[in-house]
Length: 575
Image 1 (cartoon, rainbow, N blue to C red):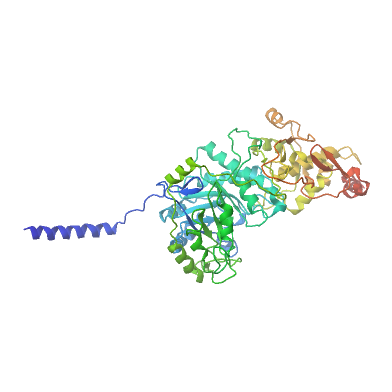
Image 2: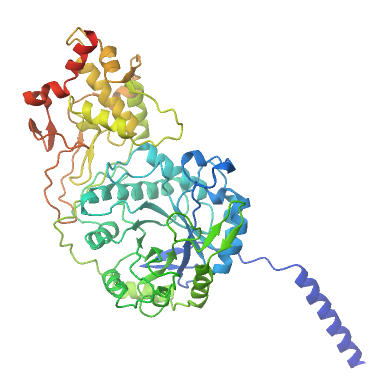
């Protein structure tokens, strides 16, 4: 009898097991990654290391697909399940747990792809910028249209637990010559994080991805990961947010072929980054001087040499393109084929088993001895002020736009860059030789920002043209304001009196000077720069100093009076 019962029980268990096999258990829900000290952690307290790959298709070869975002200059694979779902199978074969996506379209849904990635246990690191919406290192600004873009991406993606973080800027500073762009990136970090707080969103980490420039490597990491006690930048929300990044990435390709931890430069970088107060990782890696790439740097990156300091990295990149860094290739029919380096990277990631720290141990260590601040910067070439641009005021800039009468020719392309293109920048520079444009200009090296410098570039140009038209009316040939506007290449629009609210908000629209004054010297040693505030360097003739700004007045120099005078053009026009 007992034998019969045992047989029946065995058969029943086998039947139940077979039935269970037909209905696989759903994967556990993915949980958000958070930061404690300078480490990433899962909710269960285990440390998280990025085993990532850059994931971004390029527009060439995809124009025929007719995607809504292609006119904007990029392909958003996460908005198209027919692209992302097959890709996820490849990503799983690579044993990655993170992808870095450089552009997403906030006007489209990413739900199906983000959910599928979550089921596969893959986190997503998203750059907030786009080809036509990014901080321009040559002419840096932080303005309403960029802030609007960043907010839209946050709104679109903040609900997903597998959203690892946002990147506010990628290699904006490439050397000492453009380090004055750094304050605008920190302003972007500050305002994006502040927006998430105001909306009650999950505090998704926000960071910066730097390049590996020898002259700016240390100044950059210190500037973006610590604040100065002496800094007194405008803080309208009084929340103390100084735009310090939550994490720091570096695009580093120093390890080539079969170098070692010492000979590659990775040991020196690890020493330099050891006391960083935020998580640091390789936001891009994968030198191509030796092909096929052996990816031997992963042995050090996830080994005892680096795992105490670094939080992993992101290999560059999945798809082959003009850079020739891809480990897979998409052929014209849409199929994706693995290249020779695919299996190499897959094996490297599969074998990587970094030994992390528990969150409890990190908390105890921080309680006993908080992370020391980086050593004081000793630099005479880093030129980024501790004073950040104020938060762009959408309401004020809207009012300004309603009050302006002379506008540049509108762009035909609805997705054209909000930044001034070559022709319009030349026009802006020329107009600003006639009128004082200090109210709409910004200088991140000096920490001086015009009251309207946070308005979109098109509005700033229209402000300059409108001011120049007002100044020129009644001059040679008894020109009207509309005549001067037309001569300068603009379109004149008659304006009614502004509403009382706008008048109170904007005040004197064309006041000669309206700077957001700051008093702190800044958190980094920096030289006293002599270049004028204008975006293009004017001739050295006829300079005069107005307040703390250097302004070029063409009327002080007879040599340039004829060359730059709008009156000369006006006389030709009237004649």
